[in-house]
Image (cartoon, one colour):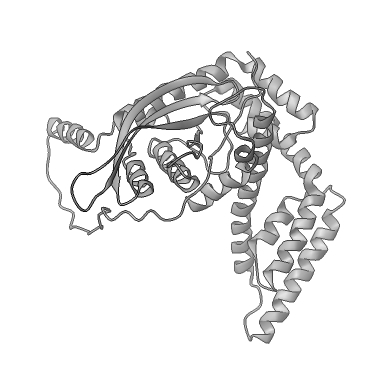
Amino acid sequence: MKLKNLIFVTLILVSCGGNNNSNQKSFTPKDRTTVEMSESERRAAIEAKKAEKGVDLGVALASNDLKLSVMPPFPKGDITEAISERIAVKLLHLTTANGIGGLNNVPGFALCASMDEVDKKLTSTAPQKMVTKYSISYSVRNLATDDVYASYEQEVTGVGGSWEEATINAVNEIENNVHIQKMLSIASEKIITWYNENLETFKRQVSTALGTNDYAYALALINSVPEKAVAAFEYATSIHDGVMAKFKLQNASKELVAMKQAILASENTLSPEVYAHLSLIPADAPEYKEALALSAEYENKVNLQREKNEMQKISEEERKHQLEMAQLESERMMAQYQSDAVSEEIQKLERELEYERRGFWGSIGSRVIKLVDSF
């Protein structure tokens, strides 16, 4: 089996702006009361709540160990890029609702959705409305090998004053349900089985990436492994720090340039981005000494600006907070690096997938991070 694995994601694709859902219910706090129940009554109440919500907690929890990306339909026809992005957010919500997904990793498997129009008509009464019906095919797959681990189809219908609005309202019908939960649970087990049965293949994938000094892609592969795939996870964990060190050394000059740009953009105010770039420059890199000097100079300028504004100098507590924020920012940056590496790998594959479009894939890395940021 040919596997240059790791594909998409993740935590995947593009974010869309606000969803103006007029049907959204407001939250009104209520006083909590305690009701004495027998064990049988308690079980019955839990089952009733599951049925009411359409949630199978057993299925949802079975998927907790997996990191999964999402992949929306390629924009075409009434499915604009904005609507594709909206679907991406919906898919991300489906994965997180079922205990799946990792913000800062780039897993090798994705929840994909294709959307085909099955009916389109105008209402016969005034005011005239547009009605459109779509068939949505969900699948959890390894996009590099095109292996499908589980799938599910459903129809959604939307009504609106324009075809775009009707399509948006149809997309709004995408909600978590027992069928999606079951699909994700089945796929989770099959993905873990893949790692268990293809450990040597996985190791070769990582070795190939390391052999070409593609450390970002190697990290993406390593970070995709779920803990339940014990042998693969132990292998990935054992080499992670070494690969990360090589990655940082390889990208130190790039991070130094980015750090200088972040300092200029900060306009003499504290910015976690400055410290994030500094954290990605290792102590054994030739650029490290210059980066430290820049950091000290930067903080001095920030303090001078604060003195002019009659503000307190940088405190240890504030510096600690900035470093905590920088950690989050550096994780986002690492996700970007890995997403870009995966995007490049996808474009190398000599296979026609429904989703494959050069322009679309080319911008996938930044689209992934936009989704993560918005979520």
